[in-house]
Length: 105
Image 1: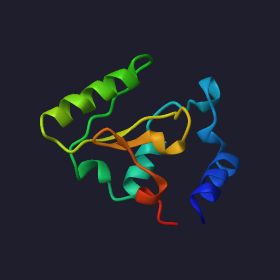
Image 2: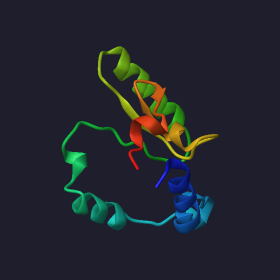
Image 3: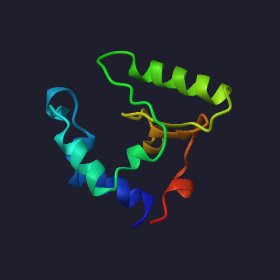
Image 4: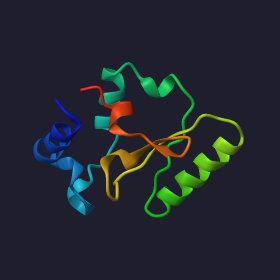
């Protein structure tokens, strides 16, 4: 499956990627906890910060990433939604990951 085919699948078969507002909200952490358990709790294998709330998550996350990078850390940043390309959601040290870097389909 190519990168383009993967995006088509995500948008057509998993409409959660396009839901906004109340339709995109599912209260509670049950789904997240099940995913973490099913994948062997990767969240416990590296230091991370989860920024949550109503407003300012993007600015706060980008500021925190810049501070950590300036302090010498290798920093990964995931934000959602994207503006133009799906790959904008994932950055390492401020650089968007291209499909050729992270997609091995």
